[in-house]
Image (cartoon, rainbow, N blue to C red; front, top):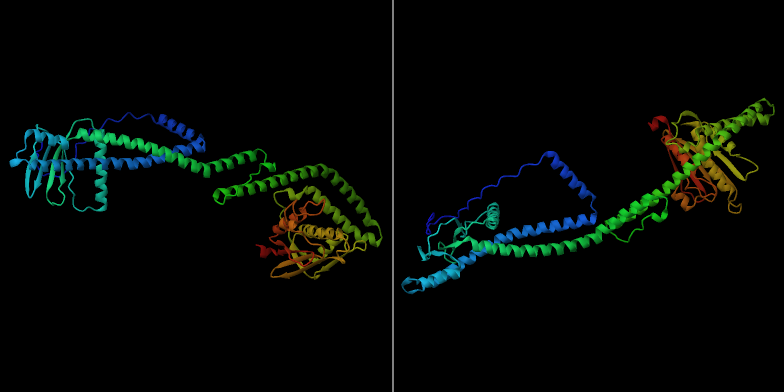
Length: 518
C-alpha cells in the first residue's frame, strides 16, 4: 500500500493531469479576417435578435455561476453521507460479540455503507472497525474535518479549491481509491476514516450535473423569453418604431404626414418620441423656409438685371434735375438721387439677407437726427396726404457711431412697418396715428426708440419676432424687415428688443460705440 490506513495526515491534493499540447496558432491575417467577418455579421443583425442572443447568453452565464458551486456542494454532501453511513456501520459492528465481526456481516455493512473500509478514533484510541476485503492503493486523501477559523480570503480560496476538485472528478476516467476523514459530532479530537472508490461518486456527480444542466437550460430559456418579451415591449419595439419613422421621414422631410406621432409614455422613450416629433416639425418648417428663400433668390436674380437698368436710367434723368432752378426741385433732387443710388446698391447686393452674413459695418461718427429725417422723407413723412404724424425727438447735437447705410436700413424697415400698420387700421380705432423716434446717449452707447400708437403686434407675431417669413401678419408681407434689422444691429455689437406698451408697438435699438463694442 502507498499510504497506511491509520496514517493521520492532512488532506492531500490529487495529482494534476498532464497538460495537453496546445493547437497550432492560426496565421495572424486569417484570425484577423475571421474576427472582422464575425464583427461585421454581428453589427448587421437586427436589434431583437441581438437582444434574444444576449439575454440567453447572460442567463446561461448566471446559471453556470450557480451550477458550478452546486456541483461542488453536492460532492461535499455525498462524502458526508458516506461518512455518516460508515459511522452507522461502525456502530453496528461494535455490537458484535467480543468485537469480532463475522465475515458475512462485515461485507454486508461495507456494501450498505458503500465503502471499502472503516476506521475511527474514539476516546484517544484508533482502530480499524471494518477492514478491507482486499489490498488497495490510496490515490488521494481528503480531510473533511473542520479547520481552524479562516479569514475571508482563506475561506474563499477553500471554496474555489472545492469547485476545482469537483470539476476534476467530472473530468477523470481512471479508477481511483480515496481515503476520506471526517469528524465525529460532539466529540472533539475524534474522527472517522473511510476508504471509497471514486467511480460511484463520479457517476452520482454526472447524474446530478445532467439534471441541473437540463433544469438550468429550461430555466434559462423561460427567463430569457420573459426578459426578451418585456424588453422588446418596453424598449426594442419603441426604438424600432422611432428608427422606422426616422427613415420614413428622411425620404420626404417636407411631408407633414411623416412627422412622428408621439405616445403618451412618460419615460425616456416617450421623451425621445416627443423631442423627435418636435425636431421633425422644426426641420420641416426650416426646409420649407429655405425652399422659399431659394425660390425668392431665383426670382430676384431674374428681375435684378432689368430693374438695375431701369434704376440707372432713372438716375441719369434725375441728374438733369439739378440744372432746374426751381427751389422745390433743388430741395428734393439730392434726396431723390441718394435714394436711387441706394436702390442701385441694393440691386447689386442681390438680396443681401440671403447671404451667410451681412457686410462688415463701415462705422463713422455722425449726427443721428438728419438720418432719421431722411428716413421720414423716404417714407413720405410728414405729409398732409397721410393721416400720420412724424415726430423726431432727437437732440440735433446727438451723434452715433455706426454704419450710415446699415442704420438707415434698420430705421427704414421698422418705421415702414409702423406706417403700414397705421395705414391699414380703421380710422375709428386710431385717434390720430403717430410715429415717434427718440434717442439718448448714455455710457458710450445710443438707445433709439421707435413708437407708434397703432394696434400693436398680435401674439403669433410676438412668438416669431425677428424670424424671416414668420413674423409678418400683414397680407403680402414677408417678415424680412425685422430679421434684416436684427442682423444689422447685431453686426454693430448692439441689440434690438420689443418693449411692452399699453397700445401700439415700440422697439428699442442699442448701438454701442466702437470702443464699447470691442
